[in-house]
Length: 373
Image (cartoon, rainbow, N blue to C red; front, side, top):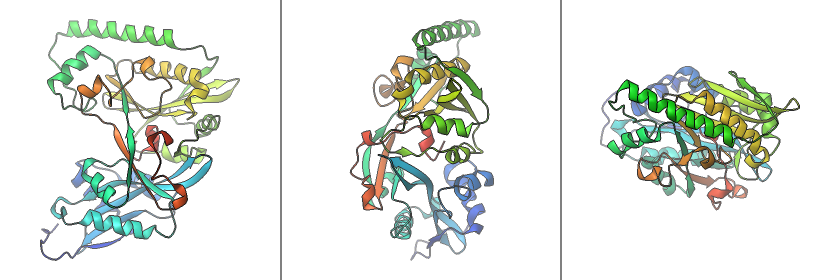
């Protein structure tokens, strides 16, 4: 790529074209320092069932792709009304072209593109680098959604985190030099205490549990349909689950609870490095099947009892503290680690959506509502 000129900008802002895919992936690797495959791009943007086009605006300088403003199409449901919404994501500007207003120009073109039809609103969880840019273009800050951690070895984790107070728990956990015998004994004690406590807490829900390595879309949709919350969330259908859980970057395990043969609740996990993410629970009105969901949770915790962390985003568990999941927005975790919680921003495109004036209590999220899972 040529060196960017600091003279008058020759950068053109335009809609994504099919021939841009390879350049998009190359820029993604340069900006985020990790690669993504063509299969991932097809899944996320080309095969998305909620958009009839690839919703990406690009910045181009003499044939080189130097910026992208991408959108993740979703069907959102609130108070019984279903609308299409777009979640801005994968926003990137080549390092040589930063501080030249490209983010603003791409944002402006995006807003122009969908001003007269398309999604009802935008919502996203921007990082600090792009948060101000979103606010400058009419997004409103709604509130913060916590990430919950369950730590297998709290004492060991405390020692590691206090060594590096700025560490983010799942990504900067450093191994300490202790004897193998001591570690083994401590691990058995903690694991045994966790299992005993979980079994004691689990209610009798009169359900049969199943474990699936391939996500059962119909069963997930049926469990979701048993109790749908009024709060804004992604509308779950069998079509949604078949597409959403086909992400080639992840493998998912699904736990289903059945009562008299019918799916009444389900929980989906994904393995990520030294932790397990609980990415989905249904029904999304959690209290409707709290007992079944907690039985599923105990089964998941038993299967992953040797992982350092289990995490859950937002409103994923009925009673997280009961099962020793603690939010990173409050003590004690907030005093030890850099929070991985996310701040929700939203912007109306259709005035009837009225999400800009909502509060965080008007939304309910699991990780499956995010573009990154």
